[in-house]
Image (cartoon, rainbow, N blue to C red; front, side, top):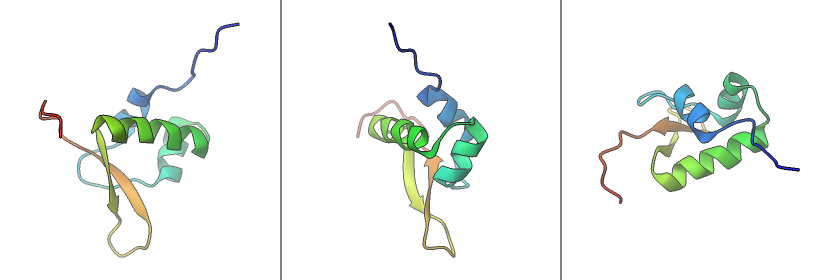
Length: 74
């Protein structure tokens, strides 16, 4: 039996923008999956350099924002 993932990292990238950080719970609600699935896919995007973890202003929590792709690996 072949396993096909229901959610892809690109679905998570579509929910993020460049300026406003989004929490993991908010992202998982928009995509419609569990928090563990969100964590796995966000880590993939973070390793690829597509998203960045930032602290939310006025809060002790952090969120993720989309990073503009310049085509240069860092």
